[in-house]
Image 1: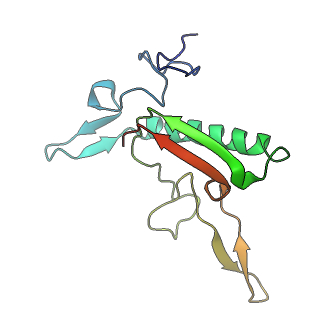
Image 2: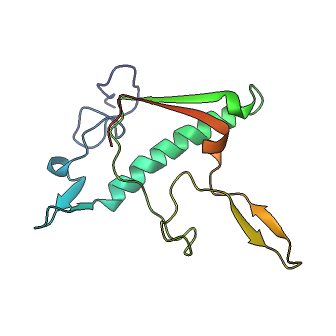
Image 3: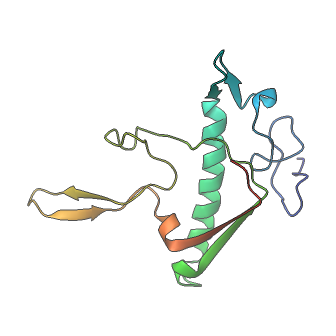
Length: 139
């Protein structure tokens, strides 16, 4: 197993890169997207999903491991030198949301049989409970 060449990263390299999926270049030369004749990008959905699942897993693990140690709003995750692709859109989680649902799903309010609105806990409320710090990142 080869380890990412980015300083302080212990993740496995992604595909034919010397860096992991978080730190590798996301461009057309390594098939993250293709460009059409109008220079518009068509992103590789498999890679996008894999990237955001990696982020989500890291956040979920950090969040789960701190339940008893600290109040969740004092939990911090730092991402440094990350190269972000486009956001993942998953309309399967909520077809009514025209923007789709990303890893940071918002809370939603729904009505139950008795007509009272109740808060529906989103797919992932981590963003509300943790401090995320992004340092030297690109989108």
